[in-house]
Figure 1 (cartoon, rainbow, N blue to C red):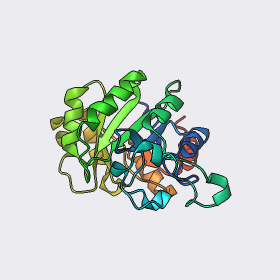
Figure 2: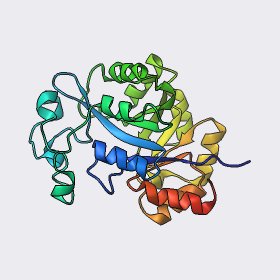
Figure 3: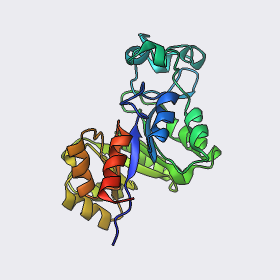
Length: 250
């Protein structure tokens, strides 16, 4: 039986080439052959869902405040591109709304992995809000919601069993496919060192898929492809695409 081509998830967009979680990174990911995009969801003071990894705005915009404490009309004015590489190339890139990414990809076949960043800050009601946005764009069949907050994933499954979920974890989860089933999750978003071929095969037998993160070097990509995972999360989607093509999976 032929193994399906793994999903190429561009981590925070093509973040190896562009400032992470910006529209520039998402567009570049699609240009480089990504078949999936992974991004992070936080919420502003006025309840807008924005795409940024850190709870703080400091690293990517220089602003010392937390996302949750700033209204979107102020956040959108911040420069989220200046810090990355050539200032001239990405100056003026803003923190996008979830809506912006959904609009960009709604007419494509791209799989969107939305990581809910609700572990450090418990954004009450975020799950329903994300689900509503996804349904508004008619994209329920192309979304995977992931989180390190597994209570949140279980809630997502109760609210929207038609939308796939992925369990984020680092290491040491015993028989994770059984754990995934217990909370209604469809995928395991494991740190790539916590992935072995026999575990991938066992999970597949139970209907659970592996989407390991964040795999950037060629050796790691080759190892994950040999494990026959269902998707790989990477900063460099073009590198992964090249290896898949060399392997003859396309």
